[in-house]
Image 1 (spheres, rainbow, N blue to C red):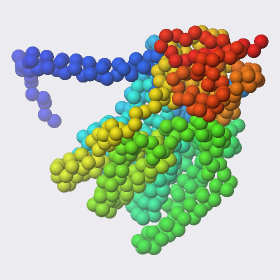
Image 2: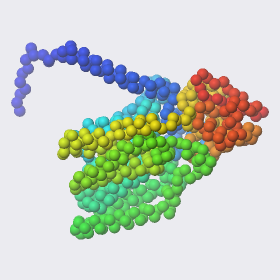
Image 3: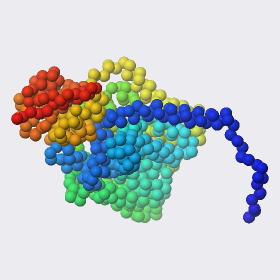
Image 4: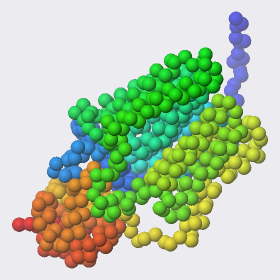
Length: 600
């Protein structure tokens, strides 16, 4: 060991020149100013509770009630009706990020402002986690050269990043994080990462079932890769299976109260998902212990495929025991509500039923990424080809879910596409040349083909209708509901899209909310608005209604008016107010018109 050379006390560290220091200060100032101008409009909306979606408002409300003392296992919303429905099929797992932020911000700013600050910052730090995990997944698959492409392709994809804008505190952003983590674990190629992937899949199922078809694809790929590769991936498959079974069971018992373990649930994690998931995971884990190496390559593959076939038959036969698994979660909704309400919910509709500009903006990138991944499958060799098969299948399945099932699946498709395309570009930089990589990046990205194509298509499309489904800021903000808030607590009969906002900004109970389990309350509200005024009065008395409210700029006004030209909604729309209703003065800038119910 050598001693350190003595330092010269007269030597000094090099000084930063004034010009360089000024440049750094200006750069920092420019970044801060740009960040302020970027985020300030979002803060202005969040600070008045003008949130983008009803689910964002309901998430704030759920966490508010939980922190105020509502039990962990009680996810009921006790102000839906006088007799609250069992729950709104949501999970406490999705409440955790906002609750963590709110615990801190409420202490610093107080409950009223603390909730708004928490709703503002939570999607931002979740978005940072999402981008970091997506970058890790791209690098794990495509090498270090995939890092820069990943930063661009993951952070510039509107279909995914929309869920991480300030105020977006619903569960979709968390689902994307779990999906990115699951992909990262599978492409990383170690047993611990495989276990992490399974945990992420289980947590995603625990949050909600929107991504379940894609999660089943990931599970099937793990099983089929084991059938094809045998001992080469035996440890990864075993750790994945054990982790999946344990994680599903833990998610279930940690979020579902024991009294509801036997309930036939089809819109959230339930008995069928857990029993069949744990059964399949246990059988797959046991199958990896079957010695097949001595049978030779072809014999081993045949035996492993046979074992998977047996496992598949056993798991799928469980549908006869748990028939709710193949029942649509919307089966309980009354046909009238499906036609007038659910069919007008944008995120629940397939992209194929929307405008061309929307399809180009949200589906073109996954399609192009899927084509690129097929090229990568043909190009890759050996075990690496397995990963590109995973890329191609997950991209096309998620894109198909968005186009033909529900448009909100576009975020899932974009997440997979960003990770996989960045990995391919990284591989091309490393193994081919930069020019080829740049061509692929220019052809398959979320901005140039999709967003620009969308803007061009939008130019030739008819202008949107005057009113949106929800109705805009005049139907959403605290100020819009301030007059109603000032009234003594009671039951408000309002259209479905107003329910969550009334609960968030007032102390009242509501009859209708935009959740399919509230079928009875939603149907009662619509029938009241479609009834003739005298009949509506009788209905209001039977319901115990204290107030009636509408948003004059909401599409629901037009929908219900068209459905029943002689109904109460038409009378209120045209300002022909029945004698049993007394108008409550609207605040300036509000489109919410509320009425007191006089039944004496």
